[in-house]
Length: 419
Image (cartoon, rainbow, N blue to C red):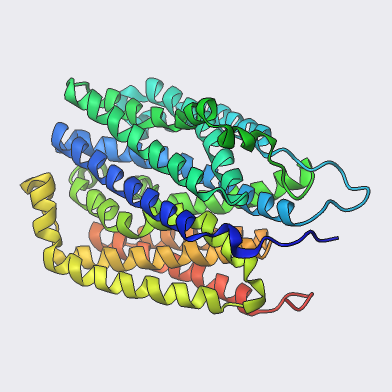
């Protein structure tokens, strides 16, 4: 039996605007953190910081699957009654924290195999910082997902914005006192615990500990695992790309790659930071408008492609000057390269959005498979015998394009129920 649907009533103008402001704050804070690192560290040390930054946010990106599935599951649970005789619905926060602890344990156990190669001499300290940040961010993901599923968008926006601001403050403080590279890296990870302060001060946030999914614990874990597999592929493309680049590039060539890596981060942030913040909004929107087919998605995709094209032209025109003005002459990047990277970021934004639509239709396997295909294509392109910049641009464009194509097939083809 279905309870009265809340529809899109949860998506008030105030809530959507709040998420937009929070995403803008997160994007600006992220870019300022990158600016602080570039100004306070040498180019070689900054290349190491950018790799740690990528590993950190790749870990957070994997847990983004917890947030996305929690948003969907809590939303459906609030609009449907449990089936007669069904097992108790899963509480999302304890399962998320256990998931984060399991990932942290796996990270610590495997770190001797990859830690020093990726993180350098500070690997022992940094792997512990990453493990603690994973556990902390699993709580953030569950709380943010529960708030989104419940339609508490103003509180969701405050949480997302505050987490980014806390990171900026911590990194700024350690850079101001002249902390070494490891200190800047640990500070960037510590902000993952921001949600605990919200838990202590906000009764609305504490309500997330009572949030339940639409299914029992075992089913919720399976669906979350699919979402996390997709999120892992997403994280590899969105924030973990410098790691893939490092693993497929000779050390002597990668040491000179800091300008390219920073350019990739700068061209992605204007599109991807807001879109990542809006994923929960997108999932609930698609859930509320499933009867309209792909029309709502097509409108938003068209808008993203338009913004991406305008951004690419802007990057060609003023990007090189902006990079030099913000980061110094050591970070010169050609305008055509910046434009191409911006266009590739738009394709990745489309993949993120089509993925939200597929997840809203409860097609978890297709969601994970599409992101996996995008990652495989990206890695395959990175292995081609081309120069570093060509490999980066082609990998960032062709991988997401493959994933979007598979998402499109899933969204257009009706399922067995005729939806």
